[in-house]
Length: 549
Image (cartoon, rainbow, N blue to C red; front, side):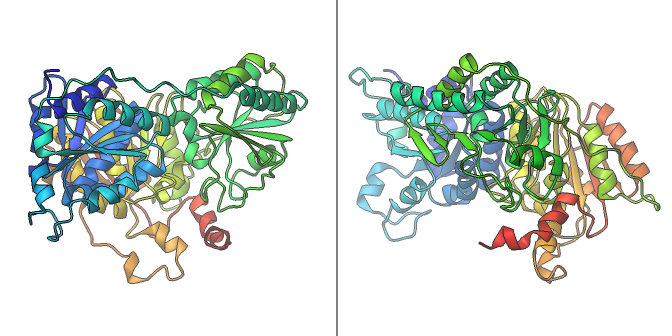
């Protein structure tokens, strides 16, 4: 085989549909970077730092299903590790390529840069293993077989893999191996599959009071269309939890709204919790999904179809796969009329007496601003909480890092999403506190000619922290004061529409321009310090159940 180890590795990633590799230049990773830049079909996406690069890969993977990241040994991979952990927690396959010192350097334990100075070259590899579903150091001899193994596990587990590439091995020719057996696709145990499917059908067929809770895992597995087909065929009503927002159509008449335990939408809570059976499809009962653990779903009600098992009334049916379960249920469940309600959005924007921008105006106004097929990236905190219960138009996607919740994620993630879908409108909504962590990535939008709509909610500090802590005016919730709307110019944007708005009239005019201009838009929205959505206030009131057991 006339390919080097790194050429073969990158070609296999390209075969999967990955044409962009995020990263930061680093000397031990030069073989990776040189090969990408010399390629006719792959593109190097240089980021401002490795953390941002990994966040951007996370956003890219949310749109394209997977992504690739390149970092150098030690300093680079550790800088990226927080974002990699987020992708692990939220089931996103990232192929993490780590450029390592040459094999001879490692074997001799030479004291070289980017190490701890103790001759230990394994420590970072060991750390990386804890946040990867599979890992390997590639050599000319194992490259082909190991790449097939890593790919198979990454696509099955939907989580990052760690691929070490020593600098000398990376540029060696791949050794022609004995025939490599591509790992077979996992198939369900037939007897267990039939037992699980029959049990589900028996329960659902004899009830007219059922609700589906489709979960984010179904989307990560590429099965959203399968879930929608099941729902359309059977007539089952469905709600979504916070992490799962927009994974299915919110304009479908069978969609009843967002379920968040006792915190919000009591009519949806009544429908879900009073159902005789609740069919989860990759549902995760996390703190924010369950409304600070206020959800009241009993084990006898709950059927949850996970990636490789089904749980029915606390009984586990192992070795059965979601795709097979959905296929059988779609074939065999009848169409029925179920009790359901009509989903509602945020309602009409409420104009304040003084014309200032309030939460009661802002979030309903943004709901009306969204268009079909928009990609909406909402930062962890009050911005996502304000929009979580907006009713989205057909095809619009809503992305939030609900489980991992690392502030600063949204700005670079929106850059990755925009690269993955350059022909779609990408809208970033973030608080100014989160924005300060990763703001440099604005320059990458400019560099690659992307035209996002960026909305910065400036409420003079970390509002979500003020709401959740015991001392809201504590100094640690304060921020350095920036002129946010002037940042794009400093980062190289010469033709962006940039504006700071403080009133409803100014906001409306700015959104009209953003919705009609062909250039990117960056709008700094000023609100009062404690101006927050109903959900954010409810979380404040539910601190005891959120943080206690």
